[in-house]
Length: 575
Image (cartoon, rainbow, N blue to C red; front, side):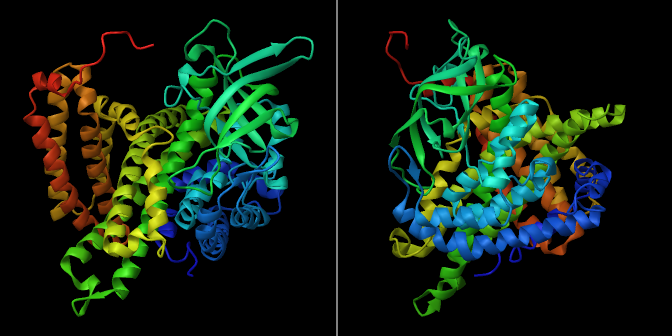
């Protein structure tokens, strides 16, 4: 099988983004660490060379280990043995391969044995891992928890826990959800009490739907303030599996991502360490962790979409019906071409979003060592604003698209796709969760609508437009008309000053903005690389029709009709 990095030229293209040069310089402290660490880059070119070499290793492992184990892992799955989650044989092989290559804790500073990678190459690695096996991507990708400890933990906690990731291959988990607190995390009830005699926090309660729940190092959201019911009573804690104070009561039987254990956990006086300050668990620390997780699901979704596209293309090239290869039927080649075009667009949005997150984090890191210049503070504020609305946008857009592409790929396979004879059956099942976990599509729309109401999306669209060199471009003319209609429609909805109506139309408005943004990104990409020209043209044609449906629905929607959608509820107050 081809190396997953080398068979996707877009990776190297996105590493050349002008903004990335500033990110690398900040991340590498103007390359001053080259005097202290043997493998620290000497300059920007040296850093890019390092990223490409590591991504080449990731691509090789993905192609020749993870992808080859994916089917057996899906069949075997994990199990519980003596209160311990035992991974499928292939999962253990996958993790060992990445661990031996030094790819656990990629984004951690070298001080803690990490590679000090920016988010961009790390997210590229995540996309490749997800393309190989989306279930395994959850296990490997939870090293994001190390970033949270680095960002908010004490120096003692950093020294204690962070070296374990690269040195020992430690696994991690976000322990947030409970039986009665899914997306509504402010309802978390698991108790954290401080034992004055032992001078330690102890956790008691149940957590459910915890990905990789029996991990070595877990970040746990718990209620530390008695007599509270909202987010202000929640704090975040580190639980170390070596303390053996948690019962793995149950492993969920799932539709997809079967290699990733999803656990029900019972905490019984489990000793834990407070992260940061009390009461900031959800409103600050978990929100930061969730934003990283949502970017990770964006990468996972693009990886799955790419896997679905490649399976469809391979099958259509080989399968003959009515005396002709099915790839030559318009109904089939339209579906496959649209998949490729959408992947180019989604990948562009994914890495644009990653750059915004990257630069924000780089400036936050720099602030720990020096005072930022006024221009730097303004730039950090600008990109943080973009990151806050682009992150739910990519999570929503990519997860929904990958589900559609998995559906279309299975359709191209016909009846055989419904069997377990081809990987698409697994990919189809794995894709379904992406629009559900780490915040459903509906919640992402509510988060991303701020990009509409504050004008952030429209402002950024105008910025992209100013960068287009060929002002007579046919595609640009279409984007101008789409933007004009989007702006007008959004303004009409907002002028009604009807919060429920705005939420009702939020997904339509967000997706309209996302389609325009992706169209512009492809046009800008085509200025640097002609291989994007076809995708830009076809994508804009495709989403112009999609946006037209949304414009028409919103423009002709009578707000009074909102009542017709409401389903009658029992008179009793819901507890």
